[in-house]
Image (cartoon, rainbow, N blue to C red; front, side, top):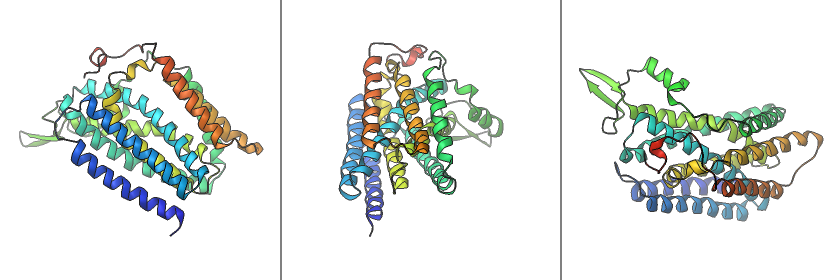
Length: 320
């Protein structure tokens, strides 16, 4: 077997065993996840991702491992913005706290499927049209400037979402959380519930964030021969830890007021890195990794002393 095949095999086995372990020991139906449990779960998924980083260093070499770590950190940081939107979705649909874990579980698994499809399409496009990488680079620079200058008081409105409008138009919806059920039968007719709406919106919202993050990961791994492997593994590990990260950070995520500026600077840097490659200028991966860590860590520490505006009152103290 080739090193790439060994890595894929180990990755698949690790993910399956970890999911079984997570679902069997960490997840209980209709039970609210405590902060301590969320901390253990987060440490479990982060530790697993870092252990895979060490394995990749051993099997694939230092360059591929550093690219994987850089891509993982990029995805993980963007997940924090994901979490703030998720909080607003749960608050809007009034989902009971003991049903949130199940909704996140299904939504995250759907998001993984969507991301796999998205990544596959991106890989095919890049292989056939290499110049599309420069479009990705320009898009990242534009997105970075847009995020940096965005009005932080502007709040995501689930009711204005095209997905929400589409589901309400074409599906029979009953706007209630009926015991955490996805569907309910009333007067002989089957209706979809708020739980169904939430799960679909979680998955599609993650896909919207992937429009920024996946091109960024492509930029990080442009010089690697096994870019598909790095993109898939970093994305899936980051998304798998999203549920635990939600319960760990939901009470403090509103304090990361300047994180979006840190992410914006990283996106601009990665976009420029992709564009300057046209002039045969290649920035070493360790420089990219250091830049990502410094920007993200700096923006988080700076944000601790500031309070994000526009957070709903029911999530101010970490409750929904």
